[in-house]
Image (cartoon, rainbow, N blue to C red; front, side):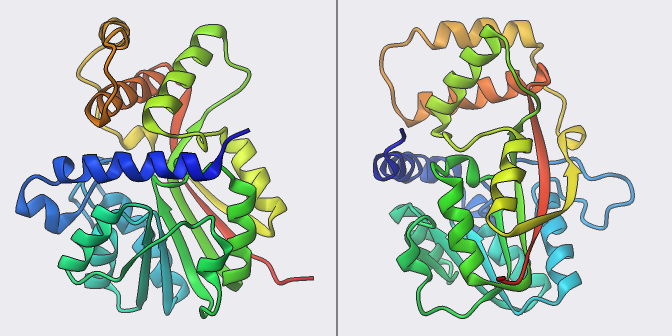
Length: 277
């Protein structure tokens, strides 16, 4: 059983420590892109790899004409700033990280400190037309609770857009299971589950799946082959000290190894909120 408060405190500490390192330069801070870079296909309008996944979210928001938009696990608000520069709406972001919220505030971005698992955060708010999460729900220790929260704050027909890593298939063999455990530990990702289980949980919560886009083919080819990467990670895992730098290196490297093995996939999922019966 995962202690939600302990898990969230670990995620907050990780991003409080890591975010300034991720955004060392002023340009990176303004962009605020902590998520994965994707290589846009030839027909794409958005050609910047740092913003292609955001452009997919933008298309969905535009398509449904949402006036209120919520970013779950928004980081320093980089995605909000990108979306706002292309489509005017009332944007709100939520983050567990005090440091991220302070940076977002310095950039005049509407971000609040809080937990998307806390039902109290949603009280007395107007419904949202689109809720999106860009590589943040793998940190979620209780998807069922989050689905319940979102159903209460999304008006009928509103859309949930999730871009994240998912387990491609199950059951896994012993080595794959060990690597997945290592990834979850260092990436603070107890919520990284199979795509099938994810869809089932949110469907039970009253959110109907309406779109599934496989984004793994758009990821840059790895520089190391899987065997060299595995060797390096095994050596690094022997390092006794644990900090955000090592978590980032080992967690990120293990994720890329799992992707190379086909165990993990990167997808965009869209769900529609159904009326309460």
